[in-house]
Image 1 (tube, helix red, strand yellow):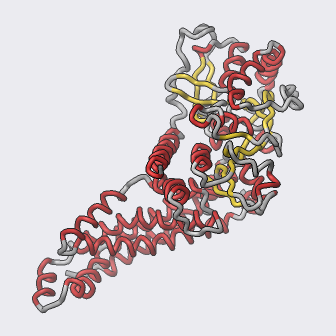
Image 2 (spheres, one colour; image 1 turned 45 degrees about the horizontal axis):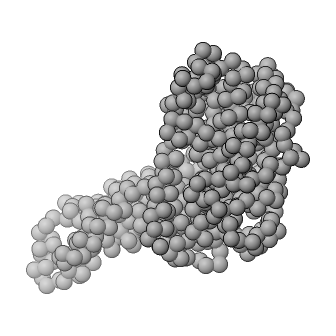
Image 3 (cartoon, chains in turn orange, red; image 1 turned 90 degrees about the horizontal axis):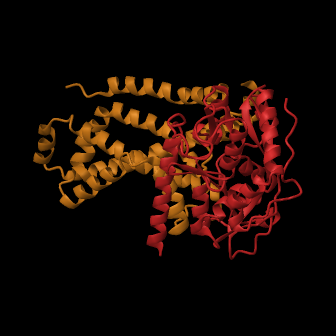
Amino acid sequence: MGEILSNYDVLAAFWGTIQLSILGTVGAMLLGTIVAILRLSPVRVFQWIGTWYVNTFRNTPLTLLMVFSILGLSFILGIQLNTTDVSSNVFRWAVVMLSVYHGAFICEALRSGVNTVPAGQAEAARAIGLTFGQSMQHVLLPQAFRGSVAPIGSTIIALIKNSTVAQVIGAGEAANLMSTIIENEGSRFSVFLIFAIGFVILTLPLGLLFTSMSRRLAVKR
Amino acid sequence: MKVRQLCVVLAASALTLGLAGCGDSANDSGSGSGGDASGGSTGKAVKIGIKFDQPGLGLKKGNDYAGLDVDVAKYVAKELGSGEGDITWVQAPSAQRETLISTGQVDMIFATYSITDKRKETVSFAGPYFVAGQDLLVRGDDSSITGPETLTGKKLCSVTGSTSAQKVKDKYPGVQLQEFGTYSECVAALVSKGVDALTTDNTILAGYASQDQYKGKLKVVGKTFSEERYGVGIKKGDTALCEKINTALTKMVSSGDWQKAVDANLGPAGFKVDTAVNPPKPDACS
């Protein structure tokens, strides 16, 4: 085990995982919030677009999305996110696909959060003359985020673990190094253990944090 | 045109999923081509690990298995007293080969299994039965790539974490390396001009170039820059089995069946076997 840790840069690989996860989370939160607003908006077309997005990307196999981003979008349609460097193109596409995939879950988590806000509040907001945007910004979304900390937390933890799927397009992260080590050293239990512990370290504290946050931030009614 | 290519890619991606899903199905594989095959099911049962997704080496087509690894495995099994009907084929993905052997889920592995000192720490090898080498696969009309030195600035494809990918990273840092989960995706990328070359063992490359849909479109450069000695993976320290397999392999070479199997599986794409190192003499068992 020590031999593996000294011969391979495990920390650098996990740093790749952390970067993927942070950027993916930011992207997923942005996309998810936008899609949630679309789904909640009074305009029928926007609702359709939001519903279409969620139904398309929710649980569409991430492997397929990843491979499609490189083989289909990058190579055939020529949409390169970095034209000079292959590995950075791959990394950026991995971030995009993690965001797109988990954005659908964030959207649904937020929508469930909006549903915790009593209907009377939305009606009151309209009654005092707030527009849809204003009532979203000042009344509904702040409470929705506080009400959906727990499901958003589980989505983010899923995102961290799902970042390993990016190895199918060769993004530099933990699972990529793990397959390299297995190729060179043979599959040993210690290899599995190192990476399992790595992911426990990444996700367990986050899980505890989200649980306590969901308790502290919940709107008392 | 683009729509058609997109469809091909979608199909390829779907295939990858299927393969990924197969990873844990090592135990539920079928029992070869049934009892009516030559040899019958009279001998002792044997479980053999092969690749299921490597054209030319070990490929599952419906209930049939074809390829060089499969043919060598059948020959060795016959010499050990098991007919085709006694063979249970088990899928042996690269990352699971040591585990399959050490837990006894397979008796022998014929799966492009290169003999290395690291692997000898956990398993024993009989053979080698073939000496392959890392090579390049390029589009048929591409004459700019003649060897690894001509790759600078080109885009090269290989499988995530594979020995071939690592070697390129270390030796030729000027090359842009795109990695995928399987070689099939690399081939799709090569055909759609997303990458300029694909690198791994020349046997695997020849297998893809021989597939009907790629005939004439892809060619193997034919300048190897490494040596991969394919051995038969067996339980560590089983020298008795190792000796028997080596005897069978020697017999296969001297009877001409080895050459026939190589020609039938790797020949169609014009692949030339490196006769300086092939057919190899089996190592001493230890």
